[in-house]
Image 1 (cartoon, rainbow, N blue to C red):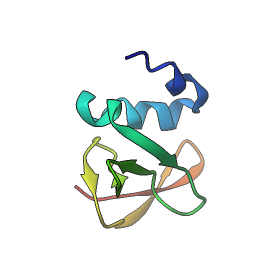
Image 2: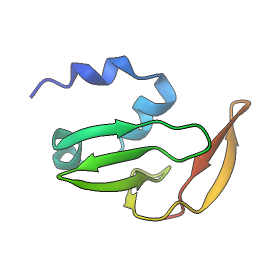
Image 3: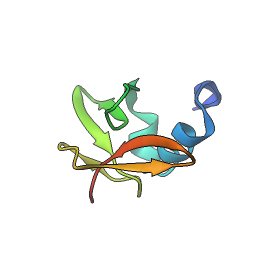
Image 4: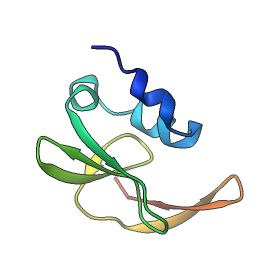
Length: 76
């Protein structure tokens, strides 16, 4: 499967998505980017947040700053 759709995202979002396991990445149905919220993905009908290490979780935990921008992160 070609994942050229990843090129549509800014580098910081793309780098988080590329940390996901390949089977998760290939099964993504939706990626949600919202101000003040962590990156959220729909994987097989289940919405989860992406942690900075590329893990999936159901609960967002904290806010961090990255490159002058505030990014909401999730703990692992």
